[in-house]
View 1 (cartoon, rainbow, N blue to C red):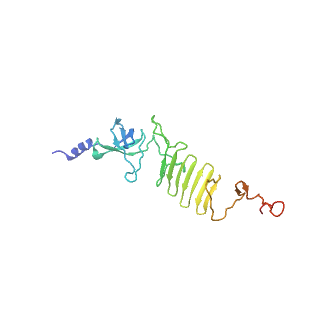
View 2: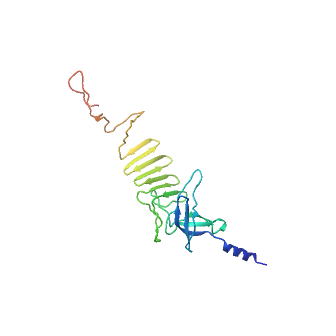
View 3: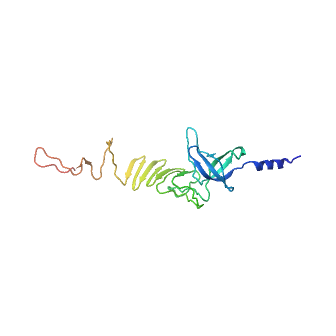
Length: 225
């Protein structure tokens, strides 16, 4: 009588197991990839690349060639697999947040574009993005985002924008702009008082230093008091 343990071990040895591999080709239209399995270095056929979400809300993010992925075989069939998930490794490291200077921590989510494809020579990639690349970082109490000189911060008490040296803050006390002028090609309407600390100019005429002609006597009035 055959030893069932030996039979089970023999069957298990013929079943395809999950494997790590490197993406060798990408088909963005079908969201599929070919993978060079490691350490055998054998290229697979086209495999579905797992997505974060499909349906009425769809998120697509095809991996770069050279990305480290885990290949899972459906029902242990070596001919039918899926590139289940990309993984960070010693070659491609997690990105650092421009807002905190650190990788995403537990309870956070960080998206950084412009980090570049995995290096072909096997060197490491620190995860730093190019200077003007867009990024988005949600922490436990703040949503940060930006691109180049522009940054945006959202908290429970307000929202702040900054572009170079110009900043704008919207909070419960109102809208505050610093570092630059406010320009519009349309009208401005205020239900309250408009205050100019230096001057108010209408069509080139100063509201602080202009004078008025006197119709019933020679000369003009004095400046506004």
